[in-house]
Amino acid sequence: MTLTRRDFSRLAALGAAAHLIPASTHAQSAQKKTGYAVIGLGRIAGHFIAGAHATANSQITALVSGHRDKAEKIAAENNIPASSIYNYENFDQIANNPAVDAVYVALPNSMHAEYTIRAAKAGKHVLCEKPMATSVEDCEKMIAACKAANKKLMIAYRCHYEPTNLRAIKLIRDGDLGQVQTIQSAFGFNIGKGEWRCSKALAGGGPLYDVGIYSLNACRYLTGEEPDRIAAYASTIDHDGRFNEVEENVSWTMHFPSGVVASCSTTYGANMEGYFRVYGSKGWLQVDNAFAYEGLHLRAQLSGKQLDEPNPSHDPSHFQAEANHFSHCIQNNLEPQSPGEEGLRDMQYIAQIYRAAGIKA
Ligand code: NAD
Image (tube, rainbow, N blue to C red; front, side):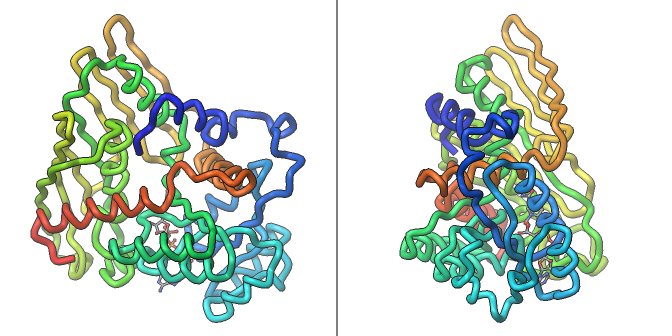
């Protein structure tokens, strides 16, 4: 994400700061709300449903699930008629549902491409979870399908709409750190047995696809640059059945055209709170819990000032800002700040990291 000062003001005005504005004063409240069909009713879907409800411009109008009982329960809680519950077989009938403007794809990674393409063909805009897909080729097909259908595609990079991450970007862009020299970032967790995330067919790969992508994406939005050289190592230490198909650990370094170097790690073998630290010629900043749903905390030591800024907002504020932004783009025919091309770029770098680490894609 190359975030210029103009982009930053636009974001603050449109989406990222919108959850700070009381609903009653929200300029969009008189407009028809954008209706979303949520595809896949797992963990993240619950956060998104709560986040969309908290906006003034979005609502959940349909559900897509392989589990009818679960879908009926969630539909009842959200005033969704039973006629707007779909399964994976009859999903394409969503084309005939005028209450659905967009879909939110919250399925395992390898299913993102199929449901994005089917949704576009059904005439719906698409908000797709990260990672965008499991291959560069699938990302390209998703972008092409949405373009052909003249529908918008946004990748759910919620940190692009999150105030503490935006504050870190602004401090860097404003020159408060001087010349950025180096970045460190990591994110990981100790995964349980039996997770689809450990299936190569469903996940595409290991922790890099799932959580390492946050560090990768952060280094891009913090520098506003695209890496031009990548080196990487991967390893599996625990042979307990979890890592038969995907690797346990990945560490990689990136060189950016300005000379900034970044060093990142991800793991499925240890609990590793997400963070980034940025070191510049005039000072440093760090964000702890940088990729969590709440509890983000920015600290910085810059020439002449020290910052200590805990973010008091609570889940589902990230999802609220994200839904608000995409609905605003749909309602005003604007390009989302994190379009399909942003997801594609990360997928290209993930492929490079894998090649550098000697992992067969
Ligand atoms: P989850 O396992 O909790 O939910 C996945 C859903 O997909 C379930 O409802 C499951 O029933 C359904 N499903 C359909 N076919 C399936 C199949 N063949 N195998 C397994 N499940 C199947 O997963 P989740 O944590 O909600 O992740 C879903 C997506 O959201 C992933 O792409 C993940 O990377 C992304 N995610 C994003 C964030 C974020 O903060 N943006 C956080 C967590 C997950």
